[in-house]
Image (cartoon, rainbow, N blue to C red; front, side):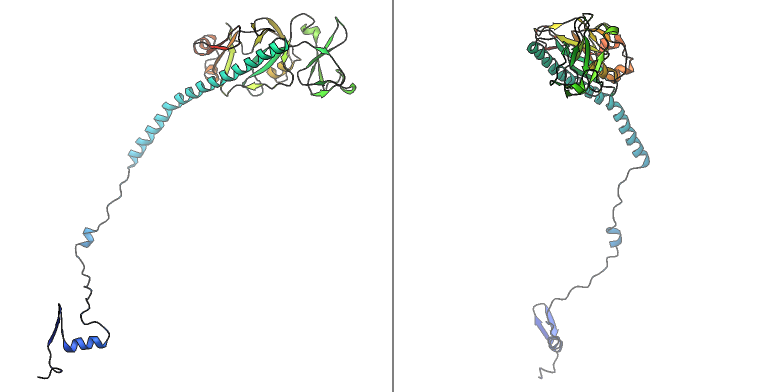
Length: 312
């Protein structure tokens, strides 16, 4: 039998080829029994089985309902946040006032002259402020001495002294004598009776800065009329004192309170404490005495050590 011309099956494992076919494949460099990739067959159901799912979404009605709920919650929450902020501001103001009172009392004892704090609503910023003040005891104008804003001097002889308030820091010289309005403001003792009339006059401590209370905090005197301006004063022994004093219209304190506007000097009574409250709420209620009495936080000053006693 001629094996070259015979057709027979070449069996190798699962590979079953004729000799001629195997030889032809080997001539082309292809392995006779190389596994063949199966032809891809299309599943007629694949277009239904691999369908993409639909994306979830909200309807317009649902969105409007959610937005309405958010607006309602914000409307309810705002007053609570405002109350919380106001409480924190009052607490901050209390700390500022306490520190200022401590400094004023220390100055009063150290310099043996009444010192205190004045609180008022500043016209320029519409915020409540405090200033370190003292009962003035003017000295004679001295060439070569340095003067700061708020210093008081006197010229002349008793009982006809003339008084001046320093408005520009400088060192005294002949060119900046008290008659020079660039450096000094003359006090009209004829119209207000300051000092010469025997009533102590009070003004800011020379060179000191006023302090602004936190935004939104208002204060009033702890008296029946709840005045917007008041003074807490300590005597030479550091004890709280109540006395009549004058705020001269030429003083720096008067200028700060009234933003430089002219007017009559003011006689006031020093206080034993003050009231703190939210300024917006006070304004909405017309700063009525009954509302302040029921809603403000009273701060009373200890007569002997100057510490603050919080009321309810």
